[in-house]
Image 1 (tube, rainbow, N blue to C red):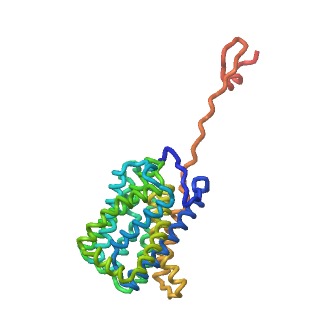
Image 2 (tube, rainbow, N blue to C red; image 1 turned 90 degrees about the vertical axis):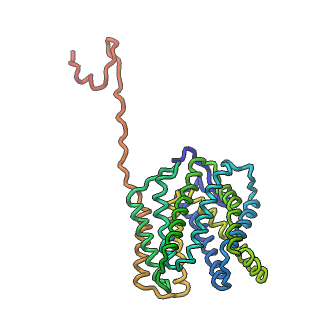
Image 3 (cartoon, helix red, strand yellow; image 1 turned 135 degrees about the vertical axis):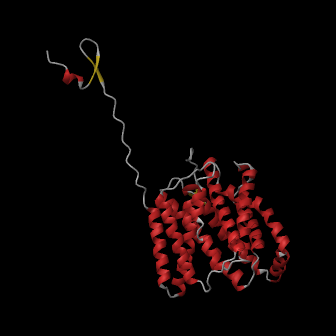
Length: 347
């Protein structure tokens, strides 16, 4: 539980003085906007141009984040947490990215998607073991998460052109990425909980600054740094796409951190998981693709999971304590309780 309620804002829009549903709507809208634009840019860069330089693009994106945060007036003097807090956070973040990207060398995309879609479950389980949280969830929230995960897997695999291809090494790597992801969201929530003065801007800035050096070794070891530099030198307009994508993703990242601070890691994981289904559904609506029965079943399960998550908890009403019986003075100066007057014989 948070002992002090920190005022929160999202790009100048105050969140703390708004109802919970408005907070949720604003943060979710920022997240969906940022990552829908991110998805379009990734489709163009990775699939159209065949530039699969994930480490290098993440490196460039980090510098755009730092520049945007600098424009907002943030400085290290405003930090309320020690740097070592963000070393742990950044190590987990980069470990998750590395294992996720590396697993694609052993798993095809549908197989990886099946594992990554289950992210919300390990996040909920890990929340019970993170110091400062020790969070426990009611049974209906676990059930809603399972429905959401199964529904998303059914929906996305119905759209897959190939069947999942499993490899033991790839399974171990993507499972490790899931463990890292479960630590990441809960560590962020724990920082917000234990130190409510932490701002979303501080967390994003420090995680980025500390995380950038972690990207250099894999870029050098794989030779991606030099290949990506040469490819982008020949196609300089790619940097424009990357900067635009980073600006949109910045909006999404700050919105995600706002969701974690206000609603917790598990709720945020459910929203990020549902985002993939919304993106796929929009593609079907825009490009008029045919929906199959498997798509319908997946959407139904996703809707059931979200509805169950939104149901209020049935808490037993608290009983008010009985008021203490009042006393009054008798004619002989002694105190006696109300109700004793009825028992006293009339004279």
